[in-house]
Amino acid sequence: MKPGLEIRINPDGTLEMIYQKGVEDFAKEIGAKVSEVNRASTVEWEEIPKAINCRFPATQGWAVRSAKNNQMALRIQSSVNAGIGCRYVDSVICSDSNNLAIALFATREEAIHHEIQHFWGLKDG
Image 1 (cartoon, helix red, strand yellow):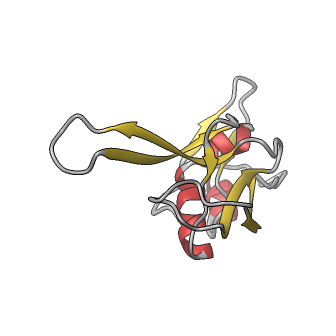
Image 2 (tube, helix red, strand yellow):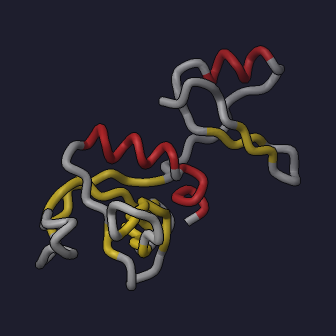
């Protein structure tokens, strides 16, 4: 869960947010009600045929995908680090690019942590 409510106001005046404990109370306080609840993403165990590379040897783990578009998922993006130390910088991003590998997390909790960070990208699919 995020420590506070993150709200997006649409052009038609509807509010969107991550569903969490206290949303109904918040809606009541502003004279509204929760009218619709939709799944933004899924967190499921997945297996891939071979490891991405030596930095990511896992062939199975928890993956996060958009509920609207199965290709939109949390993926690993690697870039060359121009600084001293680690040669590559790896980031978890929300993307539908098949050129990027699906991020596999060791625990469901870790996957959910990243899912919340990328909520809007996954929701919009």
